[in-house]
Length: 203
Length: 180
Image (cartoon, rainbow over all chains, first blue to last red; front, side):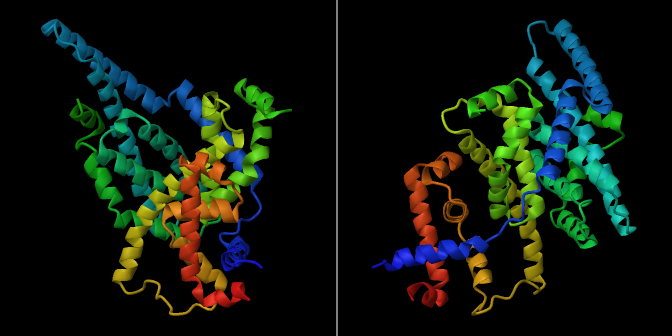
């Protein structure tokens, strides 16, 4: 005779098949996005985007200048680790500025009743950079890491807007942003002043 | 083509082999992501990220376990981390809804088994829910779950047992269905 526990287990297994029952796997759609995303990430590694390339080049020059200055003034001290940190800080500042501008535009577009594929494309672009930032020393600071994680989630949601999502979904994204104070936190994470001054601020 | 050949070809940059690897495993990865996330958009996002990471890190796969086991370890890591972020983000919205008195009112008795079961599974602690979904819903073995979640097989068994006990308690109203 079957034990009561066994009966329950069989019944539960059967009933639980209805739990989050998946639809057929969208193989081709996902494969296309995987291929595009891998291509994008590979392109980033081989050839940095112009804005980041110029930022890093400028930062490297500044670091080199500082390094030479310090070396000539105090030959006994070196600070190479600090130099690479500065490069990441400058890149992070540039990235945060771009993201702030994008999210501000996004909110303005929503208010004006505009949601188009361009937004999703830009969000995907920034999402890839966000993930690079999360994997870099720029995310060592716990506050910045939390901010980057919030931004990652917002950008994931925006990047999915083009696939038939409703205006209600877009509203939920902005509500979520408001409730987590994403934009104020983002703005306070960016040193004040125009971009060249901002990059000086981290040096 | 056996698995080792397939892996070697992917490592060598063979695009056809990459697609073959994807085709072999994508159904189970997507199903698990969907079962855990309960949302198609998130499930697709998690599945894509799983394969992107797998292709990036295939050089680190030593072959100690089956490729599917390794892949499911990446899947659970991607999904659980992703869901934690989503939960943290949505919690604020739920708190605000509750504060405005528009939160979901809990009914004393929900006649629909499907809804009651979903709520009961959703309410399980993350570890219990993950093991329950992997074992009882998707048919993973405790050994596979142990490797995927980085826990001992015994831990997986214990968590499944506790998950079932909690579900039995939560679904006591339906006892007639399994006792008969």
